[in-house]
Length: 116
Image 1: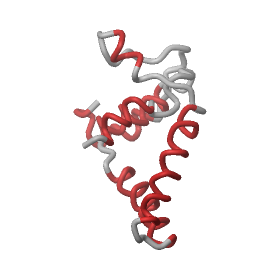
Image 2: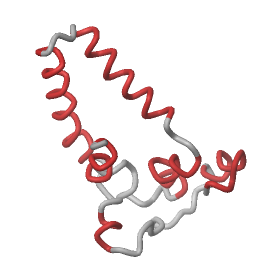
Image 3: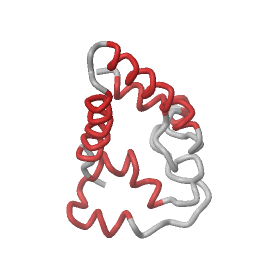
Image 4: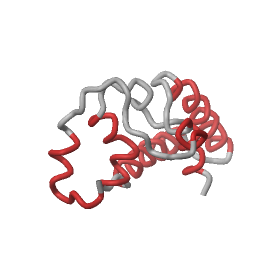
């Protein structure tokens, strides 16, 4: 999808209405890591965010600074989205709206991206 340039925005909002979405990897294990139910995201990441905010305040951040850091992280994540990156992280969910396992970004893949 990277080659679409400015046409990407129109293309990604023209859904393909089939139950299963596209396959991203030939390897079954890697493919498994790209699929998740929507409710897994808050189940996994809300405790992590709360824990990190607690650690941050224990290390001297004020609650306001911690809140700004969370909002800043959300903002930076949003800015990172280019066409290909956007499609892999979010656009696939627009292109294949009936694929219930690609509505949110999987925790395993996010953890891999967060490690660096």
